[in-house]
Length: 282
Ligand SMILES: [Zn+2]
Image (cartoon, rainbow, N blue to C red; front, top):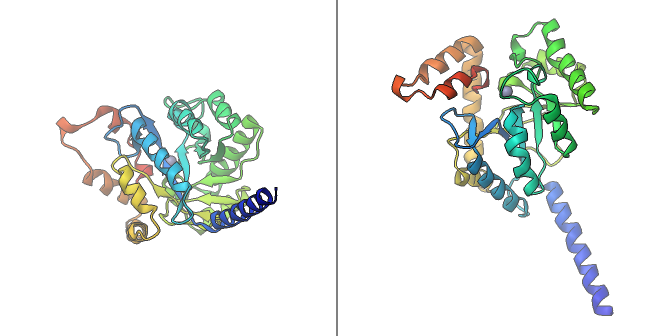
């Protein structure tokens, strides 16, 4: 009896210290967009099989007490969030945060309707906003910002019957005016595309690592290692790109991006090019 008591006491002490370790572990928020069964040449699409490998890796890494603790987010509100990602997350007891372009819901082919979005929410997944029309917020007038932020939030709240307090920036673009408008519209946290880790209790702006189809499971495992320098390198690259964008302006940057990434005619993936959305390129 005494031994049992001693064991249970030891166990509870270990559980507390494990929890404390987890609470101080820094987070890395991963940003996904669309899943497709066979993958795609479009860089923002991840193959279903590859995504399952990512999730298995994340489950394993979440059991460690060191290194970065991975979190999963999705942008845009693709139909594959519901059809593909949800069952894969449920099979592993995982939850993710889904940022929805409110004005596309139930209107744009390939994106969720309100019934799918409600089902995703009722399954315990978190929902945030991703604007009304995916317009880069830095291009919006004050009036446009009210629609992109305020109307998007109210519509999601009315349709889901839940508070929406998180916002992910379309194309990751922001400035001081945009951040002030997010706060005025009632968002308490803004998710960016700045590749950096975050404390266990993050602040108002949360960085994320954009996951592309070209990134292997092994590469993602490396980024999440405690000694990895990859994230710091990506952070430096992001700053250079952000400076170029500021100097060139968004529209010229997007034009340069599409010229630099133009494919040979015989290599064109029609499905992919029709979906190319330059607003995503970071
Ligand atoms: Zn987006």
